[in-house]
Length: 166
Image (cartoon, rainbow, N blue to C red; front, side, top):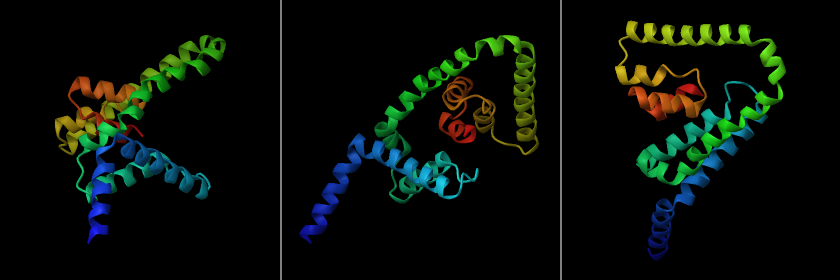
């Protein structure tokens, strides 16, 4: 009985520590990445999707709120911004090519974005999807951190947007 009490105490302590949730997040991604490589890079075995699945199962089965989890894993969320900014480096390196093709790139981006937003909205209206879910789906064509920010601004659910964006 003493052993069981000690294990329970350790579990309670670990849950309260942000490091546990950060470790779970990184560990679940590493599991997803391992499975992705084992599947010979099969697109449906996406490491991020696997990570979300693992974390969701842990949170649901242990009755842990998302807020409690996020308190520990917010460092990764914080790093999404700088990671997005880092995407500017390859863009800068290809600046001459981008300048040369600016018109075709702009037309393609605007057309694709508008089509994605309009088709998402129309399909959601046809299937009578809740407005908050619609607002979460509309910015799905951007990168996850940008889409989450837009979702939050227009009244969506940023965590749902993150899942949809991936």
